[in-house]
Image (tube, rainbow, N blue to C red; front, side, top):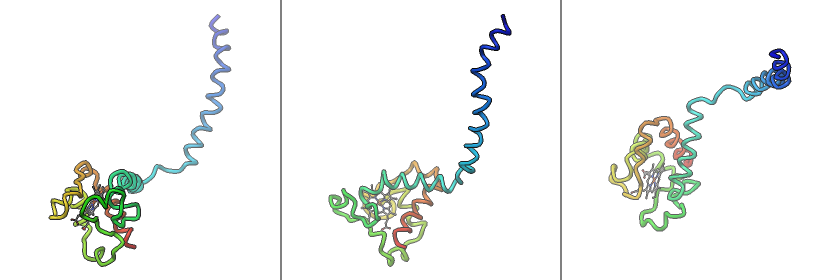
Length: 133
Ligand code: HEC
């Protein structure tokens, strides 16, 4: 009786035995997991699109869809003079604590949830820098 049961189960197990190693090979083919910087870069990209583009625009020119309604025009990030004047630390502080913290417009909102994600903030700063290149 017992033997009969295991024989009946056998065909069900066979695909697992055959396909199991194939599944492992597939994972290997996809390469090693992405680096922490790559993960942070992807998150920064998502954050920028979700939280910043409405005001700063997809090309960082300060002409997002709601920018004209603000009364204060966000900076044109492609302006190289401004890029040369401002430090990475200035950008970091404004992004985390908002415009008001540095005497700029209150419309620039703080992003306190990013305090615990320095790599994402660094990637956002790099993104802002990238518009000026
Ligand atoms: C509601 C509109 C709005 C949103 C959303 C917004 N900003 Fe801003 N931001 C502004 C405005 C307006 C200023 C200009 C403030 C000033 O010059 O007084 C500004 C200024 C800045 C500055 C400083 C520029 C300078 O002159 O030194 C940085 C950096 C910046 N924003 C980055 C971001 C990032 C990154 C995000 C998304 C996480 C974001 N902003 C979201 C409106 C916005």
